Length: 467
Image (cartoon, rainbow, N blue to C red; front, top):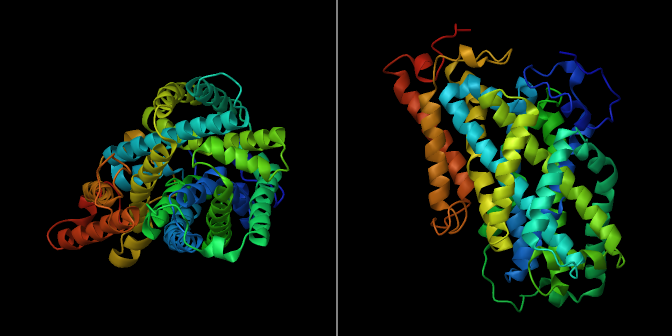
């Protein structure tokens, strides 16, 4: 396989992603600078979906101060997880679905890949619908069903992946400044013209949400679960991961929800169509510019969603990329059609809940296994190369058990309606509690089993030689 040559330091990571390098550990020659990685991650967090968080909670009656508290708590939790998840990718250089082969074994790798397919397809379908709804708000006189519009975007957004359009790279270089302009201009205009009593006072709308609910929504919106997939192209340094990721998370998940909140002050509703009409106001009334910006942003964002799902399909079935995308696209069109019949906020909350609950729980255990177990128990897996499917003979049943328990804990403690409709106790930040539950259980089981049997066998290391 041909390895991409070294590029300039400021080249966007999307260039490297187009080479895939799925079956290899990413070599140093293909690694990118913190600036390039930060540009990419900034593009994934500074989105209209991030704005929609603020838009939705304002329309639910939450004050600006409470929203900031929720964003702060959410960003802290998110950074604690994502710094380590990104560093895991940088250290191993392996694509996440293939990394699960080494840690969980065949059965666990399949489970995590299914989670990735569900999460990637769910966000892809929602973003297709969200794009259609926003454009429908810009062009209300176009008499076309929202289902037809949404499925149309699901179809054409897939070509972005098929033809190798470097959406994330182009978005990071050219579109992100315009998105920043909309957010900053909205904040500046609102704060300079709105009385402080209105901005910081209690909204007239009856409050139906909480600070913790906002924090959970921030976690669900900002987390990808497949952070190692992207950050395997980063340099092997914790600082090279944490600094650009922390800056991107702070800007994207503080600034953009705040912009969405102030935009909602002049909105008549909390749906995407209303949001797009407010965005036009902050683009000097230009509908074409707003439409172009929305399309470019959403196309780029769905690049990541399809990329995650396609990698997972490759891991399980080892089929050609085009076949994987065709199968995923069929399912996404059906899912998009169903989503078009539901309330936008309900779908948004459910997808965010699934995203924060499933794959990140597995990624948390990858972090524990690869980065923490060598320090606690002196056992280190051989991750110098990608484990081949035919060579997997041992299964990490302790890891699989902890992962599934963590997912169940997050579902049970989640806000009712998230993850599974009408299921949840609404206690704390459920996704984070699920990650912690999986971690504690995994370490506890290892500590117990270590005294009674061969520790290496119980965590799927029986076929490997001790280091």
